[in-house]
Length: 82
Image 1 (cartoon, rainbow, N blue to C red):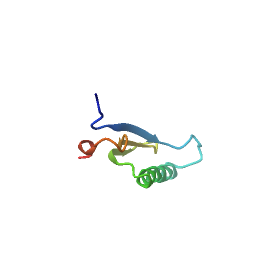
Image 2: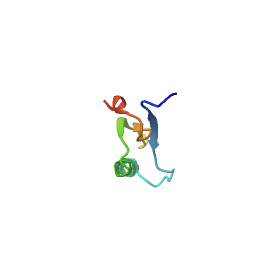
Image 3: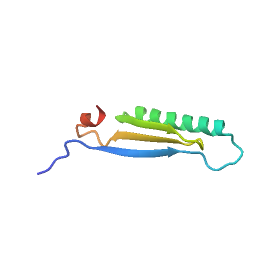
Image 4: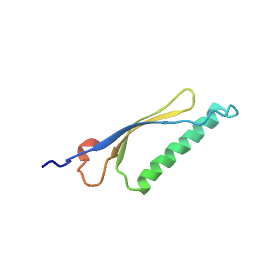
């Protein structure tokens, strides 16, 4: 018999605005920052255990976030979040 002892999901997310052409880099970056904050709030609201490994702003205004998220609430995941 096997049992999942620990599991997590590693994700690389890119937050970027659609090509509009009318927005400045500052406006694009601010919109992406709001979207990243909303994403983090949604994980907090759903009580998803997570850790942000990196959050990098790119020259085009997009933001790349590397995150570890708890796979489910059954397995022990402490080793992934140390």
